[in-house]
Length: 441
Ligand SMILES: [Zn+2]
Image (cartoon, rainbow, N blue to C red; front, side, top):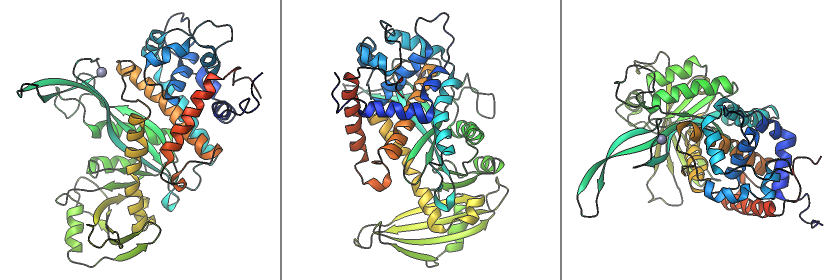
């Protein structure tokens, strides 16, 4: 007899029920395909196993392997009760190498799109605009293991005896797109930087690996095609340049880009115009304990590689309670509708929001989700895992925010601890899972 306190009440069971009812998760897993011939284990179970491996923060396939043989885990992924095993971690690796990437992408995209249709992001963010942050990310690097999708660089490594040798380092670098919302963030898309022999021929030298900007432009085009409702791109100091802003304009999007180089247009021109001018607006944000001094300049046209007006906003952020503390300065380049619709304070808020992708994204994914663990060293397989982990991350975020209502920026600073506790609870639930969470009403 299952205990009444856990029966149907476990958080893991609730999460599966939420995924099943709201996002048709079962069908999502069943839509994943791969090109193995006569596989012993259906691809849907492989996809579900990796999804829950990520969600339950299992640190390696070695740690996952014993679970694959246990009934509760098989129930969790919806495998038939009489199936003896769903294979080994080798089975998973083989399937991941042959998986149809578009089908795993669709699993994660489907969750975000459904949430959008359900008006989860209805308020938009500042100025009622939906913002996507994009940024480069390098979760994996190694001196010995490599694959045909690895990028390669020479690095100088100090040896034990004090000498320095030059070594080849292999790494995988990506550009990631993340929806940054007022309360929580969603993983939207990921694009690898291609090694020199796989990248499209272009302006770069033939022996050079692809640069971040090239991959980012490819990513942004796909992101806008997938999620037509996104309006503003937020990015860091690599991006306030003509070629990138031109693509943003072609896509009928707006940009809020951090500008760091005082000598580069259009920031150079804005700084010259502002000169010694006092701030155009000073605002005391009592809630944040900040005093904002803002300078604003519209219609700058000195960036020769971009055809259109650019707005530049500068903000100095001070803490009035600590007059001796140095102020921090932010400069943002703004194009598109955002340049006319947003106040300078809103521009600053969106520019600072870029930080979410580094914090709730990259930092959490590496420290809590083991994205930096090489589950399978194969460029294709790594991407398949990331997409399945994205789907799990997105579902978990929505579950925390919508169902448990214990998550979001307005819920205090300790949300990562809340999530860790929840994951522990879910791992306990797994051990007690005595019937499939997929076939109840
Ligand atoms: Zn590799």
